[in-house]
Amino acid sequence: MRRPPLQTLIALLLTAVWGLGLGIAHLRGDIPFVDNAEATLTNLRNTLGGSHPPPDLVTIVAIDDDTSRVAGHYPLSRTTLARIIDAIGALGPKAIALDLLLLDSGDEAGDSALEQSLKRTKVVLAAAGIFPESRQRVVDDSREPLARVPSALQFLQPQQRFADAASYGVVNVQTDKAGTPRFVPMLFRSGERIEPSFSLRVVSAATDEQTTVISDRIKIGDRSIQTDTGYLLPLSFYGPRGTIRTISASAALNGQLPEAAIKDHVVVIGATVTGGGDVFPTPFDPVLPGVEVISTSITHLIAGDGLVRDRNIRFIDLYFAVGLPLLVVGLLSWQRSTFGLITALGVVLLWFAVNVSAFKHGIWLSAALPIAATVPTALLFGTVQLWFDRRRATRFAKQSELLQRIEAPGLAEHLARDPDFLASPVHQQAAVVFIDINGFTGLSETIGPTAVRELLNGFYNLVDEEVTACGGAITSFMGDGAMILFGLPQPKPSDSADAARCCIRLAARMRGWLSAMPETVASRIGFKIGAHFGTIVASRLGGGGRQQITATGDTVNIASRLMEVAASHRAEVALSDELLLSAGRDSTPFKEGNLHGPIDTGLRGRAGTLTIWLWRSRT
Image (cartoon, rainbow, N blue to C red):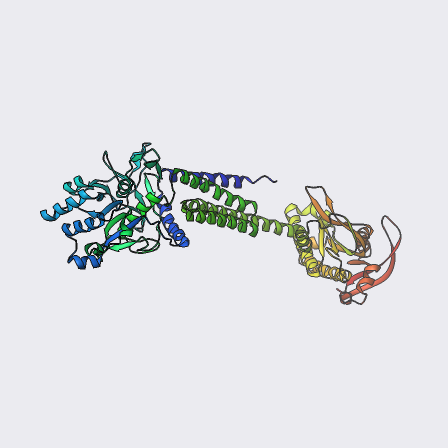
């Protein structure tokens, strides 16, 4: 396997650090921006799971509009409240939870009647805490577990006579930013004072078991209650209002309470009267009565069917916060293509399926934390990669432009499409053209390097323009000359005709170029062109670090020697008979000048003679 580039290793390291940082903060408590997103995702998972019937453990006796009508007013008098408690107590409930704050004194007769009712029945009263924020926040400022419980400014407890007649617990719940109850704290503190929650006190009274606080959980008798940081009990709602069995308190006043709904049940008395104000938004109901929220937490404590979110679950969240972004970034760097994106998306969808399935089975794995760890890092990594790709593309474009300048455009493009082009020599038919400046060596000794450079640039530019226009390929510039091929990258039937046309166009351009020069320069130089058609050996020559596309063989040698023939006969172009026959002697370019031949001539370094043709322009 190839080693990952340094930038990928740095990205993976930063991704791990980011995920680990979020995970550690998540272990210590809540992260506001993550928890706000978690609330929305929790609502989504609740909705996907749907509502379901609760265990038959708790019955709500609601002080509703019908109760207010029967009693004649609201709030109910202490005497009426005593009658309701007595009617419920007579049917043998396990415990009665009075979700009403008895903070003020009433008339003596009513308070006395209620006090006596409380003494006759196992009742738990509601107290409340006043907090500096509406949302009770848990702060991990110590290793002492009790230091993490919600801290109230003060407790509002029932009147002393009622507190002496019954036990009480703090009824506050912890909500998210939208006001949805997410947790019920099991313990509250105010200074050095620790008070149990209303729900915990009710369950302890109903089971006649002691509550024990341990460093990471709470025990009721022998049963452990798994809680989150700060002894918070996560809430999982069963459905909309009325999902937990609800009976109007008017039935108690009329003697019509169903015994089966009361006997051996925990009965929670609370207000649902219109305008009572004790309602909360939940995923299933925008106005779920507060008494049903409390009843949900009591059911969780007894049945053990609530969501599990403790320190072990938070550690799993940490692993996901580190592992998921590492996997996604790793996949994006490994396969930077549609396949890589699809694979990364598949990993995310698999994680989401696992998360939803765990939530459905009562395990509250954080959804927002891995998303917060993954999305920024993946987006940042993708942005950086796009930036690098853009830089790389710009560099490649510049390299391609330079290659086009160095190699013929057709050859460069073909080489880009086929990197193995001419890796092995190829024998094929081609037309070869040579052009050279006469007298250049002597001239360059007198005009200086700057003038030489300008002269050669002008020569190269005009050769490049004419060869490109005729469909040829310049394989090399050799000082004051150039070698041109017609037949690469693929041979064509028109190669010889194109080569002949190129010779005529080059001659015309060279005449114009020379005539535009000062007389002192133009009188000292000229040009010669040689062209031949035959078999060449096309290949890439050079070592592994530098290669050049060129052609070799007898055809190339003959074309080069024909320039000498043109110069010796004071002609502009010397063409082989093979090229002329292949191109067509009556082709258009040769009508523009004087074609002389055939001539049998010898070539330097070659035995025998060769039939050639000479071409001079009419001017």
